[in-house]
Length: 123
Image (spheres, rainbow, N blue to C red):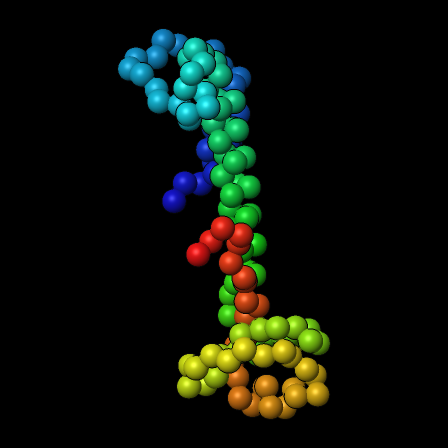
């Protein structure tokens, strides 16, 4: 796994120096590939790519949080929330959560999650 913080520190340090001659060719991201290669732009490209990776990592973390099985002991769904509930025997039920049924919900289920409907155009 790449340490993005370390890569960012190195790219910023390289920005402070002048490039010497580069041997070989570099393959840049497709949106930069049509531009003329500028060795002094590499650190900026690296920093831009690092920023994109960090944004993607945040999106993935948010999706994982939204789609994970939440233990009953961690928290319960909100009143009236539609959830999938995982029984102790690993079967799954769909619930409209109600606080009035807390005892049953806590006794029967171990985890719950918010269902995500398919996006438009998905089959």
